[in-house]
Image (cartoon, rainbow, N blue to C red; front, side):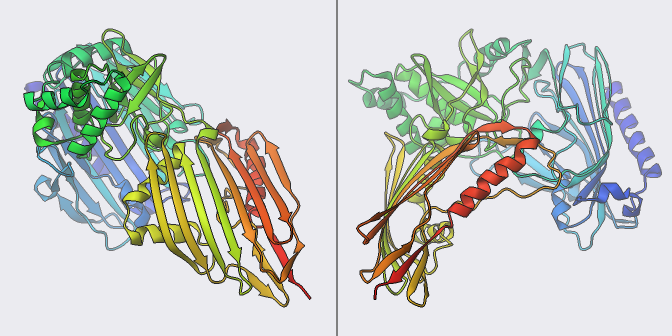
Length: 637
C-alpha cells in the first residue's frame, strides 16, 4: 500500500513539474512540426509498473496541440474501464493558443458511457471520455490518467506514431517489472527513425523519440503499423481475470487459453442440445453437419460489439449465449464451438487481428496484446474451413477480407500453433459482366446487365440483397456515375451461398449516354465497368507499394447500333502485360449491326519498392485511358 502511494505521489509530482516547465502556447511549436500536421503531440509519456503478477499500474500523460478541426481525433482524452481495469485518477486541462488555461475536467466531468452497442452481458464495460467542443483553433489539451489492473497478460505496447498528419515533439515509454516475471520485448521498424533512444535491462525498458514530422499517406503504401516504429512487450508469467498463466511460446499460450479460459464454458441447455442432435440426425458428412450448425447460429443469435479493448480473450459461457441469444465475437464463437461439439464436429477457437488491412501475428512472440477478434476453424483433411460466427449473412466457410490471409493463433489440444487463414487468390476474386446494350438514334441506351462476383469481389457486393430499394438505386447510380441520365428500371439478385457467388440481373436506361455531333454518334466503348483509379503523382515517393489483394474483371458487351448508322471508327485492340497485372481490350464488328467489346483486367497482389511506383502508376493510367476509348458511328446516306 505504501509503495502504491509513493508511486502515485511521484507520478503527480512529476506531472506538476511538467506543468511548471512546459510551454502550452502553440507559438512554441517548431515550424517543421507544423508542416502537413493537423495536430502536434507535444508530450506523450507512458509509464507501466508491474509490482506483482496481478498488479500493474499504467500512467499516461499526453499533451496535444490541435491545429484544425481534422486534428481533434488525436486528443485521445479518455480510457476504458471494467471490473478488472480501475481508473485511479483522470483529469484534463484545455489551453488556448497562447497557453492560457480555459477549462479543466475532473473525473466527475468526464462523460461515462457504455462500451457496448447492445445487451447487458458487458454492463461493466465502460469508457470515460472528455466531452469538449472547441470554439477556436489552435488549442491544447493536457490529459493525465492512471489505471490499475490485476491483468498482466496484455501490456500496452509502444507505438508512438498513431496516425497520419500528426507530428511528435516528444514521446516516452517506460516499463518496469518489479516482480521478475520474465520481461520480453520485440522491436519493429526502427531503421528509418534515427532519433529513437533506447535503454534496457532485465527488468526495465525505456524508449523515447523526438521531433518526428507528420507523415502524409501515399497511395498503395503498407499499413502505418508496418512502416512506423513499435515495440511489443510481454511477460512470461502473467495473470488474467483471476487466473495465473505462463507462456514462452504460442503452444504454451494456446494450452493456457484452452485449459484455463475455455474449459467448462461449453455447456448449453438440454433443449438446445436436443435441437442440434435432431438437426444433424442422419447426416454423416462433418462439413454438412457444420454447415447446419452454422446456419442455426446465424438464425438464432445476434452480435453485439464491445467498442473498446476491454473484453479480452475469455468468452462468456455458452449457457449465457444460449439463454440470451446474443454475444460478442468470443461468446458467439465459443457457443458455435459448443454446438459443433454436440454434433460431433471438431473445431478450434482462433484469435486474429481483424480488419481490412492484413496484420499477422508475430510467430516468435506470444502475447495477448496481439489479436482483436475471435473466429473458428474446422479441420478438413489438409485444409481448414474458417467461420466468422459474428456474421449473420456470410456463407459457410467464407470470411472475406476482414480476416483473410493472415497469421493467427489456432487453439488446439496440446498443439496450438500460428497458421495462415485462407487466401483468396487474384483470379478467384472474380467479377464477370455480360451486357446487351441497345443504342438508339437519340443517343439513349437500353441495357440488360448480368453481373457475377466471387471471392473478395463477392464480399464487396452481396450486401446489396439486404439493402432498401432507395439504397440499391443510389449504389448503382454512384457506381455508374459516368453514364449520363442513368435510370435503373429493374434488378434481381441471387445469392448462391453454396458456390459463394452473387448474381445481379439489371435492366437500365440512360437518356444521354452517347453524344450526337452532326451526322455522327460518339460513345464510350466500355459501358459498365470503367476503372478510373490512377494513383496520385508524388514528386518524391518515399514509401513502398503494397497491393494486398488482387482481382480479375472480365467483361463482354454486345452493343446494337441504330439501323441507319455504320461504324466509322473502332479503336485498336489492346494488350498490356507486366508484373503488376494484365489488361486486354478487344473490339469486333459483327455484320455492321452489333459491336462486341471484350475486356479483361487482372491486378496482381504484390509488394514493390518505391522506385517502381512510377511504372505501376503508368500501368493504371493506361488502364484508365483505354477504359475511356470511344467508338464513332456515322449516319448512312
